[in-house]
Image 1 (tube, rainbow, N blue to C red):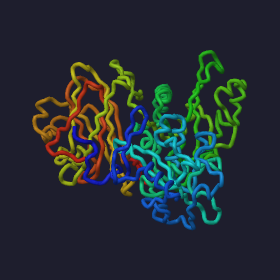
Image 2: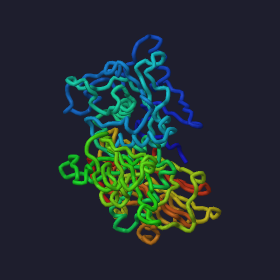
Image 3: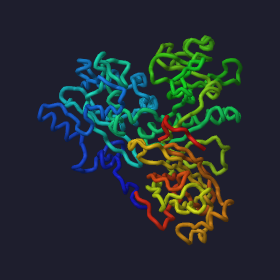
Image 4: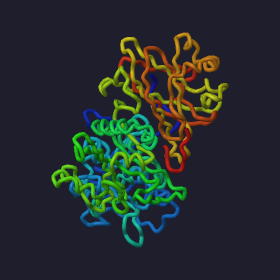
Length: 536
C-alpha cells in the first residue's frame, strides 16, 4: 500500500512535529521546520527569557470568538503565584468548563485521567512549573489521521479583563493549570478556541487516543429489549480501556435546557465507572449502575433513582457505599441505573483502543479475533470533482468513479471479523461543514475485479452482492463491523452527493492473515459537531 500520509494539501504533520512511540517512549522525527519543545526550552533557558509562541499569538484571531472581548492574556504565575501543572496528580475533577461550548473535549479529557498510560502519551510528564525547567512553554500530543503529532504552546492564557479569571477551561483547584493548557494546545491544533465551539466527544476521544469510534442509541436499544447487549458493550469496553461519553439531543433553542430529571440537553457527559449491585432485593437480581459526570463540575445533576440524595443508597450498608466510591457532593457527578440511562440518554459514544469489542448483534459462531490478532490497514484518499467523487449508489452513472478497495479473506483464516472505519479529514481545522459520507461492501469474484476500477455494469447487476455497509452520516467518522466468509470483497467509500470534494482516511481492521489492496485505476492521494444534523 502507498504511504498513508502523502497528501495534496498541508496536514498537521506539516505544522507539528510527528512523534512515534516504542514501548510508550516518544521518538521525534528529525526536522528543522517544526517547533521542537526541547530545543525551544533549552534556548529560552539559556537566554533566561520566557517563550512566546508566534504560531499562536495572544490575539483575537487565536480566540476566534468575536463576542469575547476585554481579554488579557496572562501566564499562570500571574494568575496564581503558586501555580502548578498538577496539584495532587490528575483527576476527572480537575476539569471544569468555562465560556466555551467544548464540553465534548472536556468529557474526553476527563476520561483520559482514568488511564495513566494514555494520559502520559497525550500530556508528557516533563511539563512543569519547577524553576529549573520552566521556560514558559508546554507540550501536548494529539492523534490526527494515522499518526501522532506534538503541539507546543506558550503558557499565556486568556483571562477576563474585569475579573481576572480564566475565560475558558479551568481546574477545580485554583492553582492547577494542566487542563487549561491542554485546552489551549487543542485550540492551536485546530486553529483557534472558536474552532472548538461545538463537537462530539467521540471526535475528541479519538484525537486523544487514535482509537476507533462508534455510537449507539440507548433508547432504540431499550425498545429492542437489548439491555444485556448494551451492558456488555459497556462492561467489556471498560475492561479493555475504552472511553465512553453520552448526551441528550439538543433543545430546539440550542440552549443547555435541563429536563425535570436534572439532565442537560445538548450537553456531553463522561461515563467513568460501572458497578453491579447483586442480590439487593433477591438472590438473583442485578442492579447495573453507571457513574456519569457533567464537565461543568457543579450545578444541576440527575435527581432520579440512585442519584446523590435518593433513598436507594440507604439500602446499602456503609461498607458497600465506600466500595462503590460514593460521594454526595455538588461536583457534577452522579450514579444512574442502566434502565434509566437507556430511557433518558439519546446517544452513547464509544472510543475503542482496539476493534476487539462486542456489537449489539448476536454472537457469531466464528468468534472475534483477540486484539493481538488484528491488523490495521490505512489508506489515504480523496474525492475529487468529476474524477473520484461519484456520490452514493443512487447515482449509478457516477458511483463507479469513487475510490475502490479490495479485501481478501484467505482460506487459512476462515470466516473473519472485519471493522471498517471511514474518516473525513481537515473539516474542523478548515472551518468546513462535514460532508455526508458512508460506504458499501460488495462480495466479488476475480472476474469482477478484472477491470480496474470495477465498471458501472457490475453495480447495475449485482445489488444482491452487497454484504454490508454503513449508514450515510455527516460525522467525522463512520464505522461498521462485518463477519465475512472466505473470498474477495470490494469496499466503495463515497460522499452522499456526487461532485463533493474532500480528503478521507479509510482504516480497515482485519485478521492478520487477510489482505487489503487498492482496486483503482486512478491512485488517490494521500467532525460530527453541534452545527450539523446527522442524516441516515
